[in-house]
Image 1: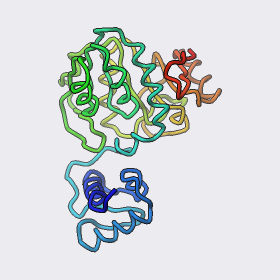
Image 2 (image 1 turned 135 degrees about the vertical axis):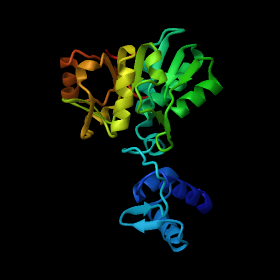
Image 3 (image 1 turned 90 degrees about the horizontal axis):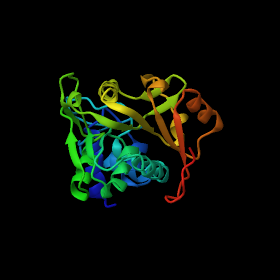
Image 4 (image 1 turned 30 degrees about the vertical axis):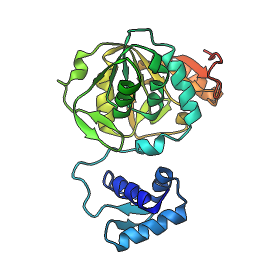
Length: 266
């Protein structure tokens, strides 16, 4: 990636969060840590941003605060094979013409590719999901209203009287920051508020998480495990995590990674 393109990405990223770390910028650009540090020094000297310990911050940050957690662009490339396999299995649960909710996230985003051959009614709060389905499928797409959060590419509303209350779904597909004995965890209160509203609009809630999410934790619990009907993950899940899921009376679907035509074990 050329220096000018890296600089554009760095300056864009720093506007959406109080502080962007060097490691985040490496993930976004594909550049080495040494290269990113040189770019930061140059931009700092040019007074385009402020260098801080471990990263950078904007000289004039946006007034609207960003959401907690890693941005969409960083999460997208993490465990991509697992996410694709999980998403393929999730779409197999969808019947033609069925109303479904797909919450914003990098695992749920991978559902757009197998959905290209379907004609479902899709409600989403994700710009990437909506855009891809509109351009590459014949699914009907509805979007929620609210504030646009560029970093996660989602729309969230703090109000109870938004359009989410008017959409019924056979299934809701959602991801998570982490999964543990206390339940499904997320990183930001606004995400939790929005997802709790959507959960109430679906007959069945399907959680899509790669096996690494069982090792991650957050201080915020979205919902207890009993609120989840189906959990789809990859075959890296530990026996202990699998037992935790099944003891909560959740249907566990374990998908072999890297083999789209293999049958999942459920």
